[in-house]
Image (cartoon, rainbow, N blue to C red):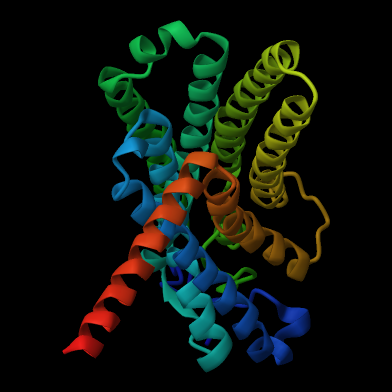
Length: 327
């Protein structure tokens, strides 16, 4: 329950999630769709990891990035969905300040890592298609080490600053977080001290990850599309347009919805709480559900590997059953 104000130095140490206040009495009905979405995330991304791990021909830079994306797409939903499900089913919707900051770090850090992976995947395809003779020179182990260091420095620095500033605030008013998880501005908006630095860093995060990453990704795909359309004809052209458009649609959902939810309180955008919460969950769950299809099943090499593994598994089961019958 909400703690009472106890003086100027008081600050809440526990917070309560109320993510869908307008539909709060129907919260038990939200359990099933979010549970099914979470299961789809786990099954789809685990399957992609299994196929890539067990197929030697897929041990290439592009598929290592797809594997990294699948890992991130498991980690981020796992940081929020189980807590949401417990809240919907058993009304376990309280979290400590330390727990909130920890969850916030995992969500925003790995979301920023996902942005870097998407950027790396776009650049990988750009080099492979637009400059194929230099592909093995550019996309090597040294490049992956540099990418890892870049990711850790950029994401680590920005998110540690974000969490550090949030941890330094005092929360002496309401302790009701109007969200299903510890979103940065959802928590910061409850502070009774100045939040100008938090807002400034929040905008810097959006500029750094959305402004820069999406610009580079968009330019890369435009150049890829230009090269493919110039060289291909007929069915190959339509396939290239379809593939690039699918990738860009998923990325735009991730970046656009994430930016709106992240900045809605900074820019005082009048979005209903239920809508804002739904968008905040969607920008995490939707790409995690769709990425295994877009970058996995719809990719020819992974599709072939998946079919081979399935046939091998079926043949083994059939062989075991035949041997058992003979015995």
